[in-house]
Picture (tube, rainbow, N blue to C red):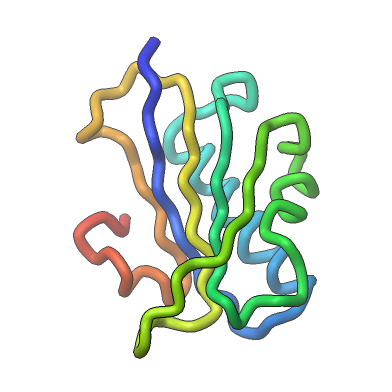
Length: 120
């Protein structure tokens, strides 16, 4: 089985712990479902957030949906002038047989504008 990277992003409406858990939980769930990934297929998940998101760690949302046994890493996205605010990006590593061009990358809410070429 091959290792694949699955990208995703979502934009929060407000910076609250509840919104972080809702938006990131939704995103991770969609990424897993769209790519038919089971928890045992996961290797690790890297989550970044824009510097304006300070109410909760994105990894907390992953733990809340049952991914606490997966290695998780949070980081701050570089703060580029004019970039979209309140965004969490995800790079999920998983064992998958699908070719690169069949991996489904998931962009939700306002983050669809980040990668119109990849958004479903």
